Length: 277
Picture 1 (cartoon, rainbow, N blue to C red):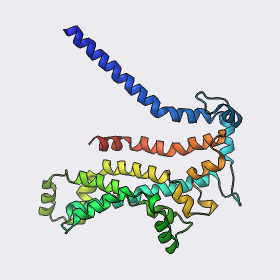
Picture 2: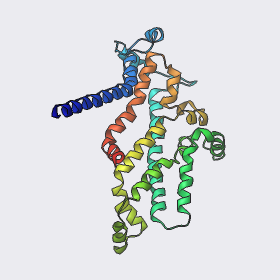
Picture 3: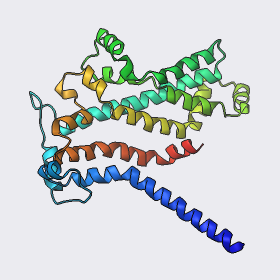
Picture 4: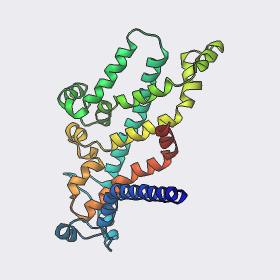
């Protein structure tokens, strides 16, 4: 009987490891292919498709990318696209985190009629992604004179109901004794937010920052629609110019992946802790 239990446990453990390994290959496989393909000649990729093993053309491909120039006035450069992507993604991440925290704080800790209805209206926006309201959003952005500006690219992406939901659910778990102690100490809403709520929310804020950064970094259609200025190109838009089936194009994709990956490494402790909680 003991041997049967031990055999069952061993089989179960092997099956679990097999599933984990399959999931790892499924998730990391595309990244491995992109990195390996970025070291091959464009002719090889066009004739044989994407590659699993690296070659010896990495220096040439990455060198061509860093010296790449395009556009009518050669304003589209890798450093320029990287700067624009960082400006947009960082602004979206920071402002979305702040806006989500303040919205959830007001919904949870302030007494106001209909606040639950307001919260559900906020959640309904999850059903309407930015792409579904391009026409109206473009009209408002144009009327504000924000065409061909970083502000015009950032503002429509800020309303993230997911962040508000994330913070609200966490605030509801905070013990009521904190509020009572703050009231006895004479702390007002601003002091309670600054001294208690924000320090306790750092890990959640880090997770929302990472998610919002990814959303801002991967924007393609909205920057394409709102800007005609070559100097406002982002890395995601630049991939189309270089060519997705070329060695330098694959090198640019690798460069595009790196900043979000590094950000996730920096915030991984907060990110995974908040998801586990």
